[in-house]
Image (cartoon, rainbow, N blue to C red):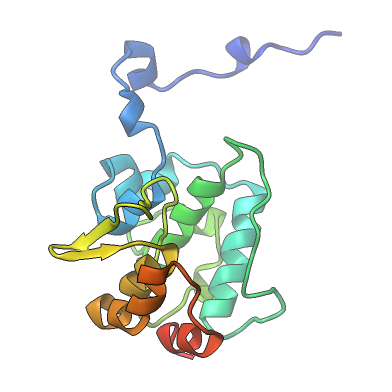
Length: 189
């Protein structure tokens, strides 16, 4: 007995069949979601989750992060290594986390991805660092007149604005990591 082919069991969306999908609209970009410049399918939580598959990995990651951020779970390390191959859903899962912690009231199918009762209730600061956009030699523009020369400078700015950057300016300019106490300070303890 032969199994059916993907062509006989799956039907592409109408926009795919019509050839109207643009490559830049189908590429997940975490920094553009965080900064509010992503295409609507990624930026709007309802559209994002409607077109996403609730994989086991995504559900487990959402659960671990939401429990930790809501103060109801700590059994998972605060550092989670996403170990999938290229195209394995890492960026997609990170975008799901961004939406989950920013607010997902408009998402009809949210319970397919995460138990709504474990979503964090307070504000969550989000700092997305995109290595592809970093520019250690020339500096990444954070705001007019302010450049980050390391991921440390960019992280400090994303977490605490200009004051955060100023706290690590010397480390950023010298391309050295700030001390653990400074990092704790930036993360608010």
